Length: 142
Image (cartoon, rainbow, N blue to C red; front, side, top):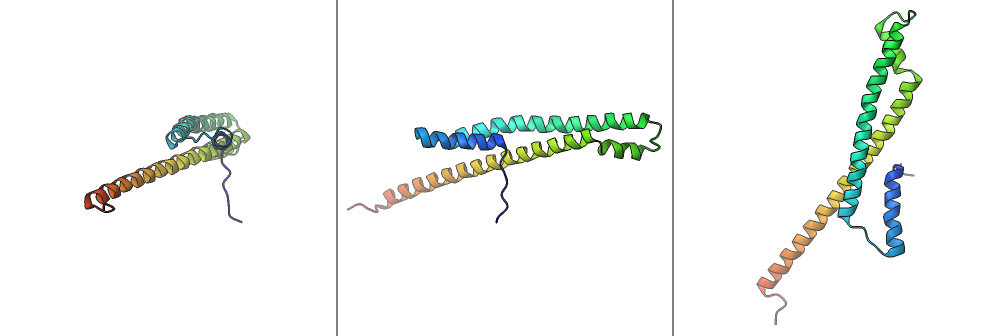
C-alpha cells in the first residue's frame, strides 16, 4: 500500500465543493478560479505559519526567563532545555508542524495548477501553429 498524504481539511473541503458543483450543477470550476481560491488560502496559511513561528520564539524566551529566575536552575543551558521541553512549547511545536504541512500542501496545489495551466497554454499554441502551417502549405485543399 502506498503512502498517501491526508490533505488539510480546508483544501479537501474546497476540492469536495468543486466536485459537488460539477456533479450537481454541471459547473466546471476553471483553473484560474481554483488558483485564486488556493492563493487566498495560501495567504492565510502563510500569515498563520509566521505568526506561530514568532509566538514560539516569544514563548520559549518567556519560559527560559521564568526558569532562569528559579533558584534550582543552575545554568543557562538547563533553563533553555526546560523551556524547550515544557508542555506549552511542545503543543505549540505541534501546531506549527500542522500549519507548515498546510502551507506546503497549498504550495504544492498551486504549483500543480500553474503547471496544468502552462501545459494547456502550450497545447493551444502548438495547435494554433499546426493549423497555421497546415493552411499555409495547402494540405487538405483540393
